[in-house]
Image 1 (cartoon, rainbow, N blue to C red):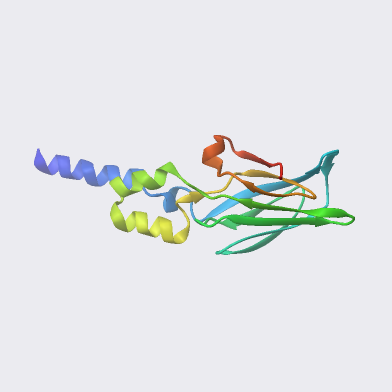
Image 2 (tube, rainbow, N blue to C red):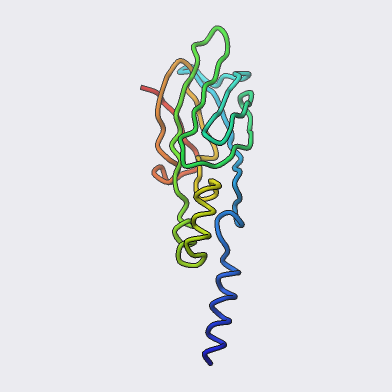
Length: 149
């Protein structure tokens, strides 16, 4: 009976896995740009965090490396003023489960590689404004409108 319990525990930890196995270190993000009067197409956007820099033309998508750091975004299109945003990273709930099932080593791997974190999947940048957006978890949605201040 004791051996069956141990085997069940080992199997369940292998099935559950950690965030790096389930979602990986990369995340697809879509960017759209707007002004008060509507959607703007063709803005050149630069996204960056401590793991790298990526470029996309709005509306569009790119794959970024997950990180605990904020995602800085700057979109430009003449003659409109640039839209600048800082998007907060959120810790995925799966990362906390990994501490229980994957142990300290699994959690450490996910934190160091960025797999334990998420950004919103759709980010709207308001041209001519600078803003900070809350993390996806705080919004309880996958879309982050960045309204500016």
